[in-house]
Length: 327
Ligand code: AMP
Ligand code: TRP
Image (tube, helix red, strand yellow):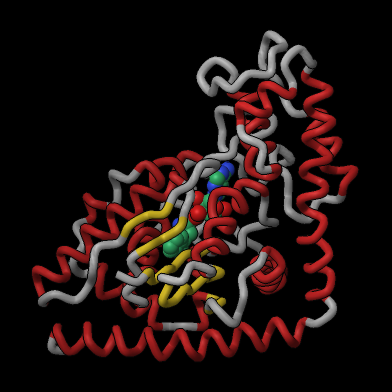
């Protein structure tokens, strides 16, 4: 079966290496595969408003995320690049799914519990609980069957399949099963605490837009494990193993090759080299991004054209869904 790809990222801050290695890198590989029939990538701005955001800067953040996608290699000739809130069918389908999904499928999800924990329960609104239903709607609206994500999103993919099955059984065969697409590096950890995943907040991550000096400084300050051998052992040496994963994914050296290369050397030598690997890797991305920043009408055109095409697919699915339900 040909691949129909969908994925999204919230515009909740600067994209970091975890986003790139866990998600966008795979998006780009998938958009280029000959058996990919279509790929839709979204700035999921409706998901982004489920956690605190600043309305004064939110528009800018949405555009920044779109710029990051394009600079990282999303090709508008091959893929659609959309803002979720510009394709209203996403929330329409989400409402329909709300009516067939038991609350108990949502309030048991680890992501829900984590989010409540993070905000001390202050943001216990319907949107947080309902977040995965909107995600299911994002995916199924385009009849997608392959979703490149980081492993933290796996429970949401399971839920998407449960919702699709329930819809099919209630109203007739409509949606195909959805598979996640994972690759090594799906969980890049914080540079300050290798037990936590790298996130957009704080300086425990490397933003794709960090300048060379910021990158060098952050890597220098990254925590390391006790002992001084450079060996890959995520259980016993989570910090150095995380840094080695980043090195491996950005340099094409295998983990074994890295172990060999740094056998007998110390952490700081390894870190100095890693910093240069990251700086060099991000250079073309940062150059492309600068170019795009000076041509925002091009970016706006890409988005509008994609959104128009997305609405054609989306409204066709929604018409089918509504017909099946007698709406
Ligand atoms: P988020 O930043 O939470 O909106 O995540 C956007 C995408 O990046 C999702 O597919 C996540 O699974 C992925 N992602 C986020 N943080 C990491 C990380 N530290 N390591 C790997 N993938 C990540
Ligand atoms: N929930 C995802 C995250 O937090 C973002 C997202 C929203 C998404 N809709 C999606 C990812 C659809 C893949 C497919 O990272």
